[in-house]
Length: 228
Image (cartoon, rainbow, N blue to C red):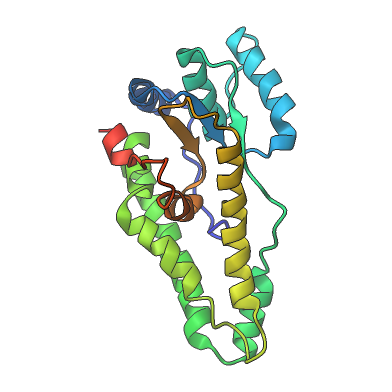
């Protein structure tokens, strides 16, 4: 859904900062043993350096969830680091998919994409004007939003003429990215953790949940339970 355009949350304003602190206090109560963030492992040294400066009072938090929630919470919990576990070495041939669907006369697919993006943009931007950061996080982690994420991508599978697999390729690449993210998380666990927190864009939530729920060593805790 990165194709959609969303309004800025003005996260550095006094009002939003109070809302971020409210969320942070609830996450602190959850008390994760490790925090995983949307940054590639190759940036780990940069993450550590920035976090060290922040803890020393030599850095202001930027307007990102990694720093506003991740850094703030990690400092309060006394963590030494946050773990970058993202993976971006995948392809997302969105333009090719739309072109292929158009050439195949698949107006149902192209209209589905355009309609969904417009609806997501509008509903998100309207909600952002009315809801707090906590309420926005609950909204983005709701069952309805997770269902929407799955449906949006799976409806792209038949894109293109017979023999053209751009739809399944795009969807499988999106899943592959999230599978590697899960792999990266699992490889950072030593078995002594009781709770962990994963901070990623809402587009990842549906798939990360779907993959992790089949791991018998992991119990998913919904955001609604943590942020209540």
